Amino acid sequence: MKIFILLMFISPFVASLENTRIGCDEVELFIANPKDGSILDSKEFKVEFGSENILISPAGVNPEKKDKCLISGHHHLIINNAYDVNEKRNDPIPFERNILHFGGGQTEATLSLPPGKYTLQLALGDYEHMPVQVSNSNQTNGLAVSKIVSIEIL
Image: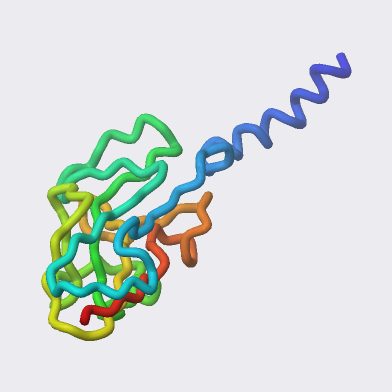
């Protein structure tokens, strides 16, 4: 009888956890290359996108969510802080200068930029280009965005 009473008190708590990311692996979005502080001697260079526990999927494709831990989307590369994803978290990430969309699910890109100093940041957008929010993450303000990487092109 004591076990039954204990289960009555625990089961509502367990059910309330069903829609959270508790127990899910940490989500991370990052720029694998170039590294922060890199000085590049060529105006053409490769940017490699990195992610952990994220399904990279093309724009316009809404993957079936069979797992509460599934985070999916495609990469957007923001150059020189051209867009503040956190400030506009309820708006689709726009197609504008210095906001590059990789809606095909690409995980790298070759860029060509004139000499100068630049910042690069990745933001994950869902199938409709909306910023992806995650609850079990060390990502900035609960959004799937990378840390800002600073580079210089000579």
